Every structure is written in structure tokens, then in C-alpha cells.
Amino acid sequence: MQAFTVHQGLVAPMDRENVDTDAIIPKQFLKSIKRTGFGPNLFDEWRYLDHGEPGQDPASRKPNPDFVLNQPRYQGASVLLARQNFGCGSSREHAPWALEQYGFRALIAPSFADIFFNNCFKNGVLPIRLPESQVAQLFDEVAAFIGYRLTIDLQRQVVIKPDGSELAFEIEPFRKYCLLNGFDDIGLTLRHADKIRAFEAERLLRKPWLARTL
Image (tube, rainbow, N blue to C red; front, side, top):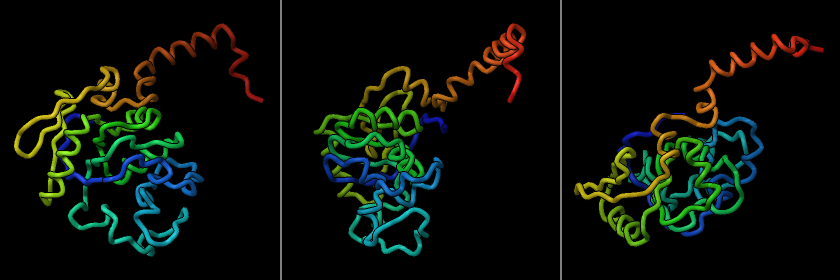
């Protein structure tokens, strides 16, 4: 998992409340058993005018020119600004996969659905909760200034605006530690790889029949 320390990125506004995970990555794309390739289908039903299916060439699709991520001013955005209860609905881990594979490193909203919120941390995406008044102000500033960028300093737990002012956010220390070091659940376990190998070797000495295969 890619570590998150300090990130500066263009901001894209998703000005809708209660964006659910089926909107983030529609159900037909959950057929894949791979963890890659979901970025082109992020917000698929809003992003394209035609119906999407797994395996389609995105270049053959009909983009919706009115959708925010298709607007030229938001191309290359890596910070998504959203409204309350972002990520509600079914608990599909494909949703943060699609966001991360599109290029988003951080999400800012007044609130997130709990399971989606947890899944983001496990996949290297930083969900930041800010008061609704601060989020509303950010929406106004993004709309007013083309190329609006934010800097997110995870170590200091602040969002830095273009004028240098800072918005503080809270994050649990363990989640912060994992993001700063790029540890997902597997990475956390592999920190103890030497102990795991030693345990397995000692167990085989005591129970050699475990090495037999049928």
C-alpha cells in the first residue's frame, strides 16, 4: 500500500449527499476477482451516457459532458470533496479501490458511512471529516477558482488551503500510523515475518506429519 505523508492535489467537487457505493462502482463491475482495473468505471452510471459492462474499452464509451469528473478543469484531480454520508450502501471494498485507482488519494466530507470509512484506510485512501460549514466553504472556493488545490499534511493533521490557512482534522493514531507507513493488514502482519517463519519451523519439528501432502 502506498504511504500517505503530505499530498498536494487538485480538488474535484462531488456536490451530492448520500452517494452510495453502487454509484461509486456499480454492481456489474464486482464480478472481477482482481483488485485492479476499477478506475475507468468509477461513478460509471454518472460518468458515461451508455451502459457499462466489465471489459469494455473506455475509449469506446460516451462520456457525459455534464459530469464533474469529465469537465476539463477537474482533470487530474486527486482530492475529492463530497457532502454528508459519502459511501453509504453496500459494504463493497471495490469502492475505495475504484477511487484510488482513478487517482484520488484523499476524500473530504462532513461524514462517511462507517464501513466505507474503514475500507478507505485499508486501501491507502485518507477520508477526512470536517465540519459541514468548512466543507461548504471549500465547495464555494473550488467553484470560484479554477485549479483549486489543497495540501494535506497527515503528520500534522491539517488541510492547508491556497491562502495558507489550515483546517485541522482528527484521525485515530493507529490508522495514522498505518497510512504514514503504507501498512495494510497484510503489511502489518509481514512485520513479524521472522517470528512467523520461526514458529512454522518449530511446529514442523514437533509435528513433522504436517509437511506431508496428499
